[in-house]
Structures are given as C-alpha cells and as structure tokens.
Image 1 (tube, rainbow, N blue to C red):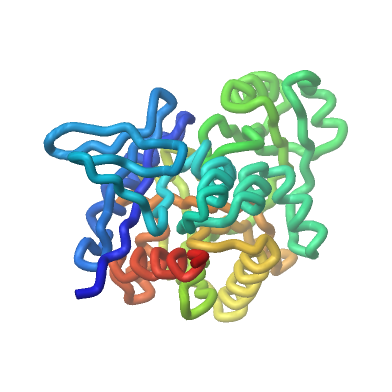
Image 2: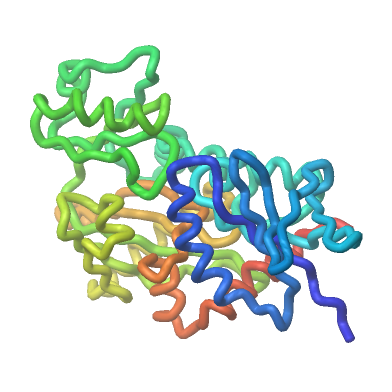
Length: 331
C-alpha cells in the first residue's frame, strides 16, 4: 500500500482577516481528500501554532515545522495554506516554508509579498501593459490632506489599506468632505494607504490556478453589489449578487480571460488566485483592481462557485492544488 502524503492545513493568522480564514477553513477541511492524504489542521495564532486533536493539543515545533503526538514525530510533505492576511498571504509563511524545503499551495514568497502590497501590484502590472486605475500611495508618517488628493485625482475615489484584503478598512468617497474619515479608517488597518480613481463599469472576478496539467482560467463571475461597492458585507454577508458564469458577450469573456491569464503569468503565480477587474464598456477594456493570492473558500466565496461551474468538485480541485505543490518538493 502506498504511503499517503502528510499535509498540514494551516488556518488562522495574525490579522483581522483571521475571521475569514476560519470561515474558509470549514469548507476546505470538509473537502480535503482524507483517502489520499493524511491531513493535520494547524491553527496559526499570535500566541502559538497549535494542532488540536480529540485527546488534546500540541504546539508546532517551529525549528522544523513538525508536531509530536504520543511520542511520534510528524513532518509534512506539503502545506495547504488557508490563511488570509498576514502571515499566510504576504510571503512570510512562504519564506519560512522555503527555508524548510516544504512546498505549499500558494504563490511563492516574492509574488505573495508584491501582490499583498496593492501599490506594488499596480506598478508591476502597469509596467507589463496591464490596464490599472490612476492612484496615489501614502504612508502614516505623511498622511495626506483631502486637498492633496483632490488636486491629483478625480472624485469619486476608493480609499483602502495598501496591504490586506477582504475589503476591510475600504471606503468609496464621492465628496471631498468625506476623505478625512475614510483615510483614518484605512490607516487603522495599515501604515500605508492607497487612493484610486473610480473606474466606471461592470465588476468581474475570475479565478486562475496552476495544476500538474498547467494553467486553468475558471469561469468568470460578475459581481453586482447591493452596497456602494464590493465591501466586506457584500463579500461575506450576502449583500451582493454573484452571477457565475457571467452573462457577457464572447468578446468580453475573452478579453477578461486573456487579461487574467496575463496577470497570472506576469506575477508568476501558483496555486489558485482570484483576480478582480472593472470592465469599462466605453473603452472596452478590463482594468485590474487587485490580486488575491489566498482567495476566500467559504460557502459564500466566489472560487467555490467557479469551480462548481466548471464541473469540478471542490475535492478534485483541492487535490489538484496539493498535487501541484507536491510536484515541487525537492528530493
């Protein structure tokens, strides 16, 4: 009988996005194939990294990323990363696993760090000829005044933490008088803030993933929010309509799919990423909004919808991500 690979499924995290990680963990854990893999869920928290089982819990030995149960040392063949925010989405864990020669189901450390920083993402994308919105980048040491922004960007604008995801700390601002509050809200989540000009159009999001068979673009989803934009409530509390696959003409579909594949290749992505676009119908072009390298996997999340729309089960999908990670394990 073949020995089953031993997989660490890491969840939790150090940021306010941990709550999203735990929602994703429910779906992921339910659909990991325990017939093919031995799965150990590791809860990564600021106070410690812990594996819990029915008879107790043990701390992870961070010197070699192992656990010891009943006197038996367990090492891992690969890691399934399910942490949104730091340290699972910003490259920190990826660098740690690289040091220990443990492959994982996400982008590498460099790509994770770049895409976690929205300003750097836009800069790299623009250099590659990918359409992006006009924006300004500020640090907490030099907070902008509303007039600093309106003298250089046209309202309305989006104000958001430069690092992070799940739309936490993000605001859409239509009038100059509301900018100061939006800036303070964003700075509560991060020491850097990005302000972007609003681009009119329809919002689409698409998953792209790498498996042993190559790069696959999932069916496109159109996001129609009941709120002013696709914020945390819209993403995770049912305040949006998500149409998968999107009801759009073939030429628009192809334009977005081509842009998504281009983004995936330019940033050297791995695992599954979700790429958000605004399609401006006047210019007939998709504009990149952001790249999520550890996209949500909760029942309300978009990637599971797209996987099912393609005719795959989540079990098959997660298995392909793990197999792709295992294929990168150095002997």
